[in-house]
Image (cartoon, rainbow, N blue to C red; front, side, top):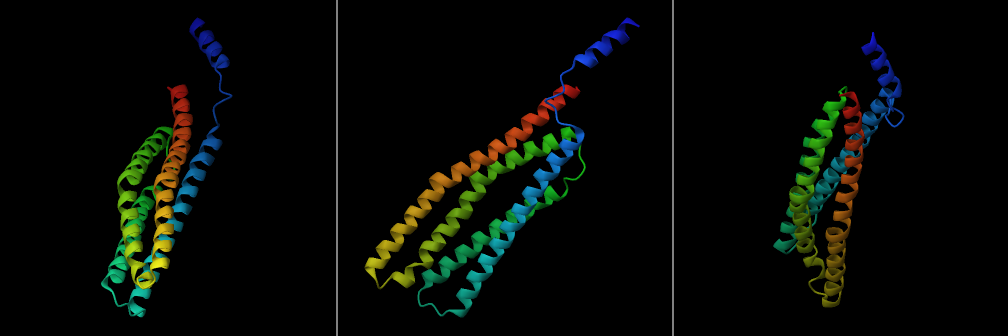
Length: 194
């Protein structure tokens, strides 16, 4: 009986105040999944809209220079690649329904790995396609006006530099911190359960 008393004493002295309840964990998983699904659908819809809009402009408007068509095609390619990447990721999030803490922890780790790959590889390709496409697409409207050409290309260069060197790294850091916070919470729960 001494072991039973020791077990009861350990059970009653365990600190569980910092741990979320099972209901809170299910809410955390549901909230995480809901936010990610909503964001992914929004990105898919916007990418499809931009791609269709650019295709319609290229078909309807008679441009004289090949650079305009090539730039539009690059923007469409970037939009399609972005939508395809998000659709592929959407499939993973749709499968996340009822799962254990360990399964959710593995899911978070895989999400973090995919996020790093996306920001370092996929996003680079998408941004390069869209940036080069945008630069080429804008050449025809401003080719006859040197002042406007310099002004518009300067604004474009500043915008692209800010997006590339300021916004993109901050987004990676912010998303990484969110995933790491969820991961640390789950790891603390898992350690308590083992």
